[in-house]
Length: 240
Image 1 (cartoon, rainbow, N blue to C red):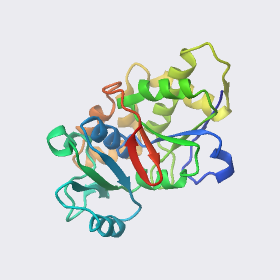
Image 2: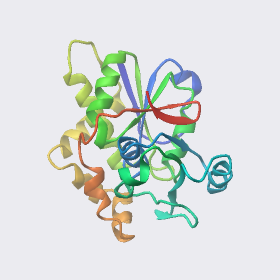
Image 3: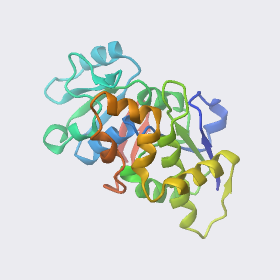
Image 4: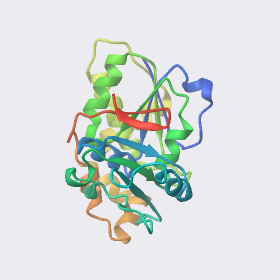
């Protein structure tokens, strides 16, 4: 298995990922929200690029089973039901619901890698489930970090490094790591004993603290809260 991680969030060439499993990671906070929502019974998530697209898409569905979620500048969008804190996405709100989600970085990332052979949603919350799925699929892997408005994100790289660590420790296969993958793995080992420390050191993590979302940092750092592995296919995220 060849494992590559893209440390900067620019769209990869379609032919680079068309025969690879892709894992999208946006720890603070889009993929953490997605995994949380699906683990709490959400029917499906539709990630969209813009606020306008979200409002327009919502018109096609019944308001009784559809919610709007997301953020701009880390805060809930006016007229939306939910923001971008995974703590909001509990079973009493999510069970059986469709979620239309738009965020600054994470929802755009899925459209950037839509040509991947299989596109999975990764976070610390479901890291072992994702690692197991990647190991079982036994195909070349491309880990895509959504970053922070075009910049490198420390917390995303640490999670990518943990995913690599979990996969290679399952053993019994031959693994080839790119230099980027080795770098992320080493970075994870630096923070392995205290994952949330990397959040407080990261620019985006500090920004969330300044904006009043500090409680989201330890929540997003929880490891293996669920085994669900959401899959992005044809514009929609579901459990499959």
